[in-house]
Length: 169
Image 1 (spheres, rainbow, N blue to C red):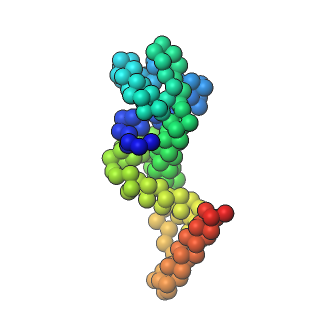
Image 2: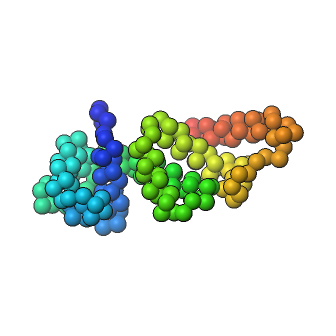
Image 3: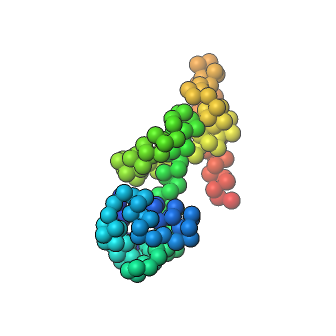
């Protein structure tokens, strides 16, 4: 996709993604209800998303995602879920509050920062030495850090090398 899409378009794609996952297709009424907007607003956005080739839509018909729309929506959903899960699992934030905050964060800060945060959240979830401890106990701090700060750097480098190796496989 040559042009970037707006945060509003991302919200619609995310909503359509979830509705399609739940019901196989999305309907204008369901999209309007979920986003708390008018049906005419939904219709206008659906035309725009169709023009971007992100959805399949004809008036008075069901809505589905194109392969490209599925890919874009999947990235939006993954960012949202990673932010929400980090707040719930690591920071012990209430799920509803974390879900709302994740939505604001994914649109309120640059995509670069969100992507880096998501990478960090994924690292915390998968790091073989620190991840599980961070998730289990908020504020985990390596006891050796004060005695041998180089150990932490070596551990992080080792974990990153393992992730890079896995990505290459």
